[in-house]
Image (cartoon, rainbow, N blue to C red; front, side, top):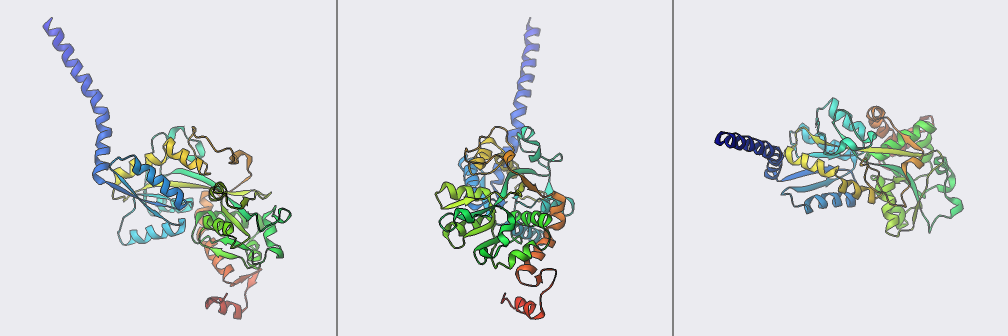
Length: 362
């Protein structure tokens, strides 16, 4: 009898040890993350929304501090490449809206390491990747936006081509693709649809250019311009919620769709904390926060605001990730040449105009 109880006691201890070993492995990761103490997040998500995500993480009091560096997709990509050349690896997690950059960072530069955030198995397929090099954190569309106090209803454009009409001369703002993924994808999509001369003709209307697609909506709300040819829909959604006199336009040809990835960086100085933060990004609470702010996400359990147009109701102009990789740099150079007056319809500008452009007079 004693032997039987002894055997049962040993078996019980073994079972208890097995049960304890499961959370112990998880706790070891968390202990390592807490020891690292912080993560640096490079994010192109609008500043106000990025701050909400970071604050929500810090409010969990995990012993890990989220530090945010927010900038445009292009700037973040160039910043990290510059830091990497100097072997100054500061960032832990990167999130931008240029998926082409992620392909380069993964395939060529080896900047990314695989990590599968908790729960993403249940996500919508378009928001996942098979090798877990990145996961789509959020998606949105690029939409024209006008000031309802300054633009009459009958004058509101219904087509992207309407921006080429003379009546919009000096009344528009255009997002510069040199700084952001949304503007890059939009220029590629519209050039594919209307031809290479579309932006040259648009430039002839002398719009302002701005280095942030999201901020162009703010210029419209302030009345500094009548309309933006394209701003991020979630930024427009936020302005509308705040009561600003702005309204979105859905052109009949459709709207550019942009999916924005997030990844753990291979040289992350806080690798365990980076994984904890990635789990936070793709948790239901964070994904719901994004949806509440006008974004589209992959989590199946989020509920969208009634005022938000379902993706299924929109005609989406999608740019293939490989095309983003191939054409991002050429399209940025082309934009610069066009808006400096070096390129005109089908030919080079006159020497005089090109010289003036180089001197910054155009």
